[in-house]
Length: 299
Image (cartoon, rainbow, N blue to C red; front, side, top):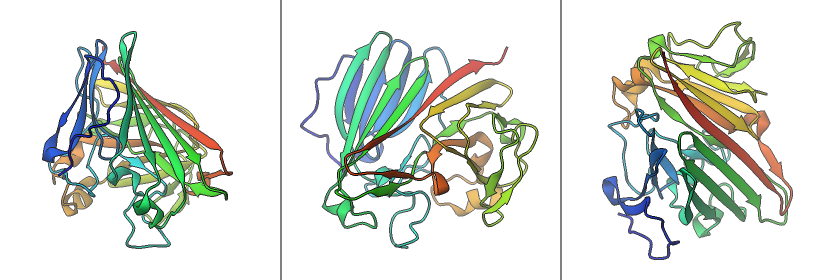
């Protein structure tokens, strides 16, 4: 079980740090325009609720909250690789960032928003991993009527490094059968379900009739999730690829941390730089990727 860190920034009245599920430290935000919960474990945003609205993020009731294990749902940070590590099959899927405790380094009230800042730097554990480079990652979470996420990665090594990154956001929806994702019309995609084949883009929004696991390379536009009850816009900068995922029946049933019937109420639309869009950083340089979520209730 993790313990509450003793070295903390001064916290405004709207921010509290306490033990969360499984004893993992959690930052709870109760701002004027929205509330949120962020675990230090993985700097994992587990909840965001605009004032007067419903929860926007999906969390699995079967999620595990233990050190070294990824939390299922919310917004995991995938870094510095995405998916399995080709060089080390024992390395954690999607990198070490989502299973490592981050430091809360700042918290402030700015107008109606609350801004949290988290930091992660290399350690003996990360340097012993399949990606042994010195680095600094800064993650800024702005909680309000929108949720804004900003991930900045700096290469502290003396050689160039290549990183993959993703904000693996899980969104709560009414029913996947009635859900569409607009903004990817005409964009070709890598179909992971079919073994990674490149498929031509469709004319209309993305719909869901079976397991869906797609990487849309070269996509920078805002996407909009619509489920008949509301729309969730996902705007981004510094991101050249988008992932859309729903496990459907069989894969959901096969995952120990995913309820067998939960797949109907979630969809992942991920802001990322993966595969051919991986970022190469010269020594001392940085890259910033942002995502911002805006909810509009159906009339």
